[in-house]
Length: 184
Image 1 (cartoon, one colour):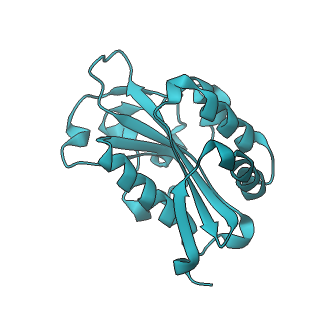
Image 2: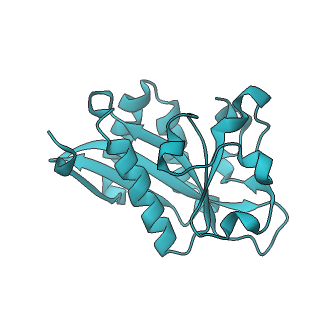
Image 3: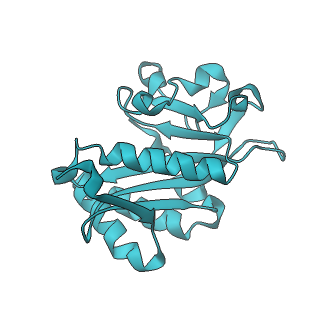
């Protein structure tokens, strides 16, 4: 089946079971699904962007963007963290993850978000415009990233001047603000 068979929509509360199923199958364990469930209930993560990819009536992919801020800055721009991106194993390597990323970035741009951060695969996310080693341009990850994985902490500027603004430590939603979520 082609990529044209995929429909992306905002996940609703009634889609919760589909979201959990995608997360469990994509990662092969429950840790990510538990994190997503916690983030969906976390007021510090709002406003949340949660998107599901469907192939016919089956949920095959999910992406979650949660609100973040710059530490100690009351005038922090509207920034987000992408975590996690999940596609069921049998639907991977078909472009669905990229479709979810692009749909999420487009939605974030329309609500006025300025930047998106991700801790992720160094060869995957740059294909979608993420700039590696966000720490080197002044955006410190919520928890230290080992030097050999510095490139995995990335930023995506949603407007041309975004990364020229306020710098500092990125503060994520409470549910994500635990050291175990910040290891590659």
